[in-house]
Image (cartoon, rainbow, N blue to C red; front, side, top):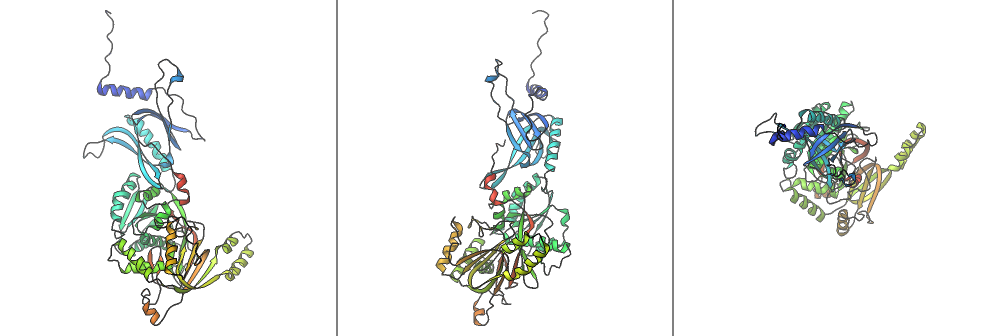
Length: 535
């Protein structure tokens, strides 16, 4: 039509994309979904998630989004597609980053792409992994506002460490601990913004000496990458440091104080019973994510003492077959770890012999009654009377196990002591009396099945608070024939996979919830699995 204004040209290329982005930011939105349980919205905006424009709502507890769907051309709302809302819990998010595209070698700046959230996901069989959720938006102000709110929410979660003291045992198992840390653990710590101070141990007792001197107040936790022996040393060092800081005499500790910071365990050894018990699986990434997420579990600890000296803090111990197997394996350190373990087991089984000793123990029920006494005088009388409640058994025993935790492992999925828990204030005393080699092997095989491994006439179990083990020390020709005795005539003990030969007569006490470990109660793991469609 003559004189009519020519239509404006449609935006092309980048101009068109910019115009669409501006329209998205100002587009009117439907009312926000109603708050759930007081979960008030903090922010609301539009992001592209998985190539779809989505209406995103952030609250202190959740991040929710649903696709923005076109209206029906006929205006019939009944024909509109139903948008499916997706939700992630903020407690499962451990990091948020501003996402930019950078050229090779470029360290700062770059083209803004949006925000990326990193979430902890429970896949299957107790295994944790991390996944990324990308919220794409080209507005700098918009993304920075969301980034600040997300960081504020994440910083509000308790128990998540910001600084960690890390011990790496490079000699563990196949010397793989260093690679495990730098390839699998350190990247997740960096992603979560956790600062680390790393000590690669050079000799046995190195971690213990460092823990006695370092400033633990500068750290939120301590992490050990290694096997059960390495973890036992670090746990012992943490608790010993706690007694020193409390001004207690470390030569003999009857009422120890709690460890000052939590301990994290990254499995990288020949045996990883403690890690398996805490996480339900031997998996370095799973262990790392439990630490990053701040999952903390209070755990009972034992003291192993002579009548005049504290020997060790620990979680479990074996005397007899389990200790002799470890002692033989330690004598053959030159062998590969798997071969050394199998050789020691078969050799000790071939030379199967019982040890004569006396066991004295205080059943847990006596102290449970004391805990419910409200009258102080009655409690004192009960404690005095408890001295008469000690029980004794004497004889020849193939193995004696004393365990304050269930001690799960691949060979015993139900645990070496399935009737105890991480923090129920008790120990399992498992006594295997002398029997034939055939029957003893049947008992050992039961650990790998769902059957009760204690359903044998020669196996006795007790739930106890204290145990005293008094071996009958051999002399003369019998002592010379026993290759497991040291120069002082002491029998070996297996304490958390670490060999101890400092004493034969040992007094074991359990101390409820003496240390916090990063991990969860494995009884709850199977029921906590979730799914997520990570973009």
